[in-house]
Image 1 (cartoon, rainbow, N blue to C red):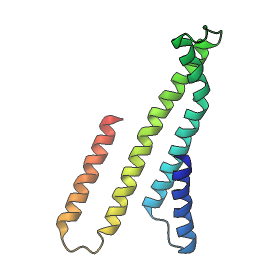
Image 2 (tube, rainbow, N blue to C red; image 1 turned 60 degrees about the vertical axis):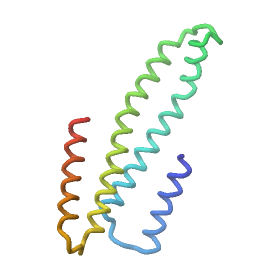
Image 3 (cartoon, helix red, strand yellow; image 1 turned 180 degrees about the horizontal axis):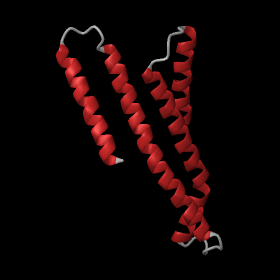
Image 4 (cartoon, one colour; image 1 turned 90 degrees about the vertical axis):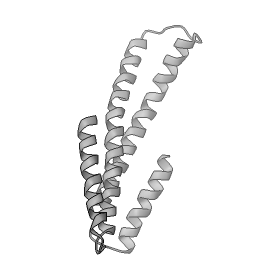
Length: 132
C-alpha cells in the first residue's frame, strides 16, 4: 500500500509540475494525509518484529524472554500513536474531498448543492470534535 499511495502522491506532484497552478487546500490536505499514512505505516513496520516475538510467546512456540514486557510496552505505545494518526489520516482525506467538492461547485446555479455542502462540512466538523 505504501507503493500505491506513493505512486498517487508522485503523480499528483507530477501533475502540478506539468500544469503549474496555485496549490489548493485539497492538495495540501492530500499531502498531509500522505505524510500521516507514511508515518503510520513506518510505525507498524517498526513494531512488527516485536509483535511476532510476543505472538510466539503467547502461542507457546518460544518461552518468555527477558525483554517481553519492554516489547509489549513498545507495541502498546506504537498502537496508541497509530490510533491517533489513523484518525488524523481519515479526517484529512475527508476534508480534502470536501474542499475538492466545494471547488467543483463554483458556478453552480442551484444553491441547494452549496447548502448541502455546508451541512456536510458542519456535520463532519462536529463529528470530528466529538470523536476526538
